[in-house]
Image 1 (cartoon, helix red, strand yellow):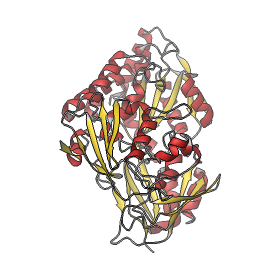
Image 2 (cartoon, rainbow, N blue to C red):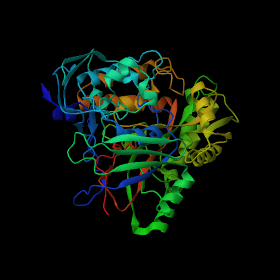
Image 3 (spheres, helix red, strand yellow):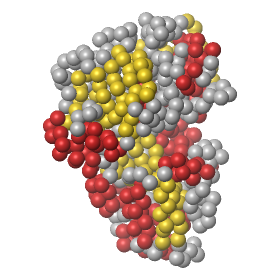
Image 4 (cartoon, one colour):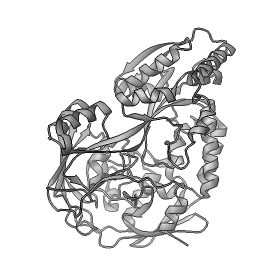
Length: 526
């Protein structure tokens, strides 16, 4: 049997650790209330159904997970409710040893049964319950609890990303007794074992939590409580500039960060790093002429990504050129590898001539189409940039800007020709990053609506390959194939720039704004 630490290193997708930047000081101090901003309201209280940071940045402090990402050494895993774990040599059996002495906020002891009920609900949701990430756990064949503090999960086949799946920030652990009475209990109620009790949600105004004194980590949390303030982006910048909030944990665009810097000076610290925030172009492959690979390739070849990122990074948080996996992550394609693929040439004159030739070969002259976009930054500036790039090969584009609800409806229904899409995930594992490109009949959320069995085959192979080097080769082959077929084409990747008041300590910026949000290690230096 392999230890949990070894399993984390060997089975977690082979990523080199990111060195997170942290707001630190010598010794944590107890007390105080952290006030931070969140851009929007939660749409549900149920972590298993939630899809946005707008839920997690309120919910995470109330709940525990089975495993978690180590905030000081991403992507290493550490136990949360599991003190330690083992994985069998064949990669099929995961045995978790659950902490003793853990209680829910109502005083009920946590046992292995709560873990089992939670994961049963995630992998096989009953009628009326939404489990957005159910497919990530379909390899789990059985869940057994031989005693109150042991959980044994057996897979039907190896899954290279399964350990990182157990650290998903969306997998809040719920009380089995509450689920037995009502599987929809978490939709409207909050009961966890996390560092903070739920106090109040005033719709449109704020969300409050208070310190849980029986939390299972000694001395944590350090804060007496927290207050999440519901805000718009314009109100957020004013609130940070005026010291009305101490933090916003997602990230600011350059111009907004500059405004806060000018107003607060060294009273605010800015923590920068990579970001699992990806903006890309999707072609509706059910709509001619975008069912023709030559047309899709021509449109991606016309885009000067290397030349465009510098001006784009001055006005938005889009900061990096990359493929379909985060630039610099262990399994991403290098710049040199990207340059050999459609859309990443350095010689734009030659690339655009080839784009024109492909359109002519496809019998397309005077191509015009509508670009469906979301009417918020950075979507709009990215859309304007793309329209200018396509104009340079003689393509005419109408810019259709929709509010978020209309954009989301068009996106999922296929009511578009070309669309600017986005994705923000909670880890770099290729199975999480690339599943959105599976054939539409396997993964309905694939907005390109493409059917490509080679994609499905390569995705399955990399998912089953537990040797990191061989898995990386398969991931690179899959990504190269997707970029060549150009069902969806990269725009740019984001960069995080998080503003914290100088007194806020103990928080690390990881590549995802979904993780490390339980606030247990945060403290105020006053």
